[in-house]
Length: 436
Image (cartoon, rainbow, N blue to C red; front, side):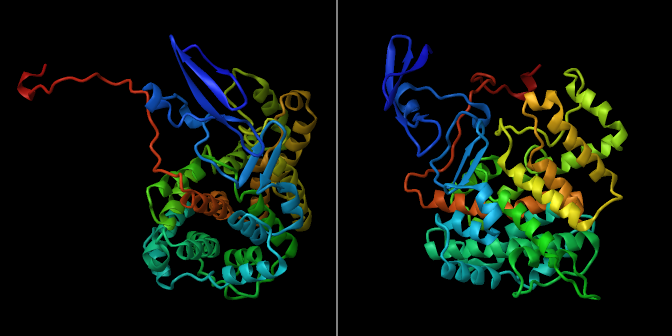
């Protein structure tokens, strides 16, 4: 293969030996142009090879845009900073699902519909009791979300737009309840029913931290913090879990099964477990006095130690979500007045050094959202086993929006990645008695 040479604004030429083919170039609203290779195999008999699909647009989408070089994240065109500072999570959910910010009447109606779907079928509690008492909350969440399709048969027909929307509202509403139930089950406390007079974030905090023997009052600063965390994690373009949801959905699987598949993918430490890994690193450092030792190790390319929660695969500049998460983190720490948590002391000092140290500044190894969210969630009282559960709760609306967009795309086909086969060539079966 010689090269792909741009010949005009609308096409590219692929030359192999003495043959050439014209490939269309497609333009998005913003962002890089793409070479459309949808008919490449039919025309040339060749596939492309792109492990991880890092140079391949797997779909057309109008939901989320990321510019990693400039540190930009847009939901339906709106900067994440504006949504997190001025809106709330359910407003962001509406935006991701419907494409526009709601009017006051639309917001009130949407909030009402979500709030009235927060309870789960009472038989779900018996389903939970089938798990070992030390089951990981993510294992429980994957199973319970998948099981929703066994309880809500009236919203699994993906060809019916009304059923698709009912399923979408149900998942946005019920996954916080299931997540709180998973947490309560893991610590041996009774499940707490949702309350319709509370907002989305406050309701979740109450379901997690209240107990029947005393009143629980939601702290508005902590509630606002968890709401912001949900907004910041709501969607992030075609990442591994979102691609998993789309791939599962392309087969026609019901929406509950598709979201359960996304949760399972998110469970991977390279994806949803980054904030937990950052907190474990702080534990490894152990004390503020040992930070210089670990900074030195991080700079040594021959040392396997890496600072977790710094830098980002997509963002080559400062993660725009991290700026908001940093502010939120310090608001929570200030409100709670935590003074005796050594991990939080290490985190604050490590942040200070990393933002000033020339080595990290030059390489743009800034603290990312996972660094700050892990600290914040710990301060709020969540164990590390719940971190990815909270990520899944927040990302549910993004998965649903992406799934819904895919289902409604007339050009969508079942996902079928190709491969570069490197196994044995064709050979004949040898009877066992003749094998050596």
